[in-house]
Amino acid sequence: VSCAKRAKTPNSELLFLPFRVLLAELEAHQDAWPFLSPVKLKSVPGYRKVIKKPMDFFTIKEKLINNMYLNQENFIIDVNLVFDNCQKFNEDDSEIGQAGHRMKRFFDKRWTELLRKQ
Ligand SMILES: Cn1cc(C(=O)NCCCNC(=O)c2ccc(F)cc2)ccc1=O
Image (cartoon, rainbow, N blue to C red; front, side):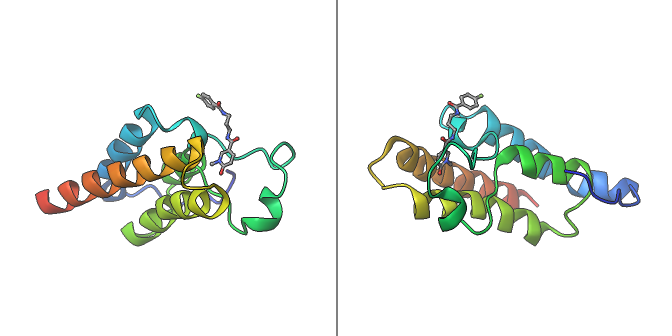
């Protein structure tokens, strides 16, 4: 994701360390495979029309690395966008729909654990 590289202040590295750890855990999860890279709009009929703001774990990682998240809120908004898009486009009982529900439950659990520690 090319964007103006923001000044890398040391504390922003530290501030976002928990998010990089959390994102790495999401990517390592066995149910992450539908979300690791952007949905291929040419090969998934209807996706471009239905999903206004596509998002995926790879794009989130790029934004984190390029310091494009100004605050914690924007990081959470993008992660939840991945799961909301999934629930919107996929039936709950579909393979990808089930993976999305499991990933969201996993994320919510780890996120609250991370917050409680702070
Ligand atoms: C979130 N979402 C994803 C798809 C979708 O078709 N996504 C690609 C699946 C194929 N991708 C893989 O199988 C894969 C990718 C990376 C990897 F490391 C291992 C396997 C369709 C609708 C939707 O809402």
